[in-house]
Length: 396
Ligand SMILES: Cc1cc2nc3c(=O)[nH]c(=O)nc-3n(C[C@H](O)[C@H](O)[C@H](O)COP(=O)(O)OP(=O)(O)OC[C@H]3O[C@@H](n4cnc5c(N)ncnc54)[C@H](O)[C@@H]3O)c2cc1C
Image 1: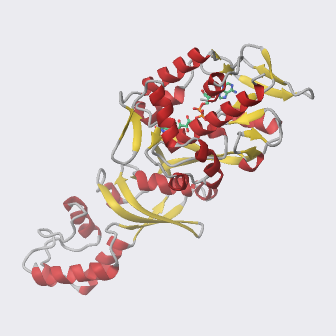
Image 2 (image 1 turned 60 degrees about the horizontal axis):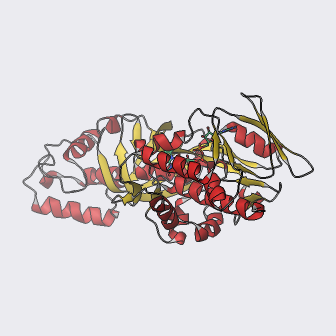
Image 3 (image 1 turned 120 degrees about the horizontal axis):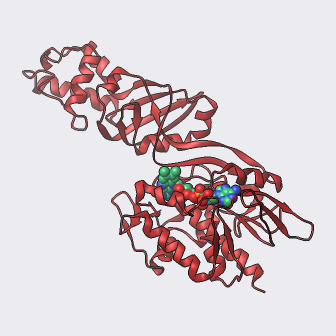
């Protein structure tokens, strides 16, 4: 995006040095091969809430190029996007190859040269404002007066940034699931829940939110779990991924639940607990397993449902506690939290405040988003801003 924007703005000599044999490898595997290009989010104040790191600093970049601009950019170049119910936007072809072809043909058309199989090893900044770029595998050296570093989470980009004077926030994984060893959860594998309330406690710090979760072979996953891991990424890492999770499966207050149970006791007294389940948002399998887990006989009549049983049930449904024993596998999307400190970047041009002529874009920066297209969005935005700024200063 940065290279294409600079070239389209009239910069005559734009070269991409790409380590891999083919560019855009992550775009290819993104969104399960469909590429979740961006999110249907039109208010930048809402948009920035989807970035656990980088939220406030992104207000200015998004005021110039946000989701609508990214959609228009792709539509102008022949890629129509479609919005899913949850706001995620994919190419209508449902194929990440469409996005890759678009970027490659836009690069070619605008005169960008792409040299693949070239790993940049070091970059030196000489006194006469020229950068010397040394490449490892081809033993080549290039000269440039402007550089845009967009190396994602690759360690070389980090070491190059440091060598040019930048500081980096330590990188830790984001957007992962929870590994929990619990027999009750194991008996409920495959069940999903909407509108669950989770409280995550890590080292006395509390993170909470409502949303959907899924019980998996290893523990818990789903959009709400990924969201909490994003916001708690750093503190979870510091605590060795050990934490406590409190689940409210029903999203109800204890008074509401008590009233519901008392109503059931009176009106369904002749039914057994097994034959009548008073909650719509939990499945029969979950309900029966829960009764067994609480050592409550499912053949008990609601008429005989004691206060002791009620107390146990209320605790298990509204304050179920689980020990998180580690990080589970990633969801469809995975990003690294951490990267080049944003205080050291002019967020209008994406130029370094430390090294003139050096620009940054994408995941190398200390910015990361939630799952849903927000990660690509900040990459399109920072690439576009950097490309514009590089071209403006170089047109002569
Ligand atoms: C499985 C998966 C699925 C994802 N799906 C989505 C999704 O659907 N939507 C979304 O918004 N986000 C998604 N993401 C996140 C998204 O892919 C990243 O946020 C995004 O690719 C970051 O872009 P970038 O250009 O900063 O870095 P990258 O895409 O990682 O690109 C960096 C490029 O630089 C090259 N490079 C690195 N170091 C050097 C060097 N020293 N010399 C030369 N070249 C170098 C690399 O080879 C690479 O091609 C997904 C991530 C993963 C892992």
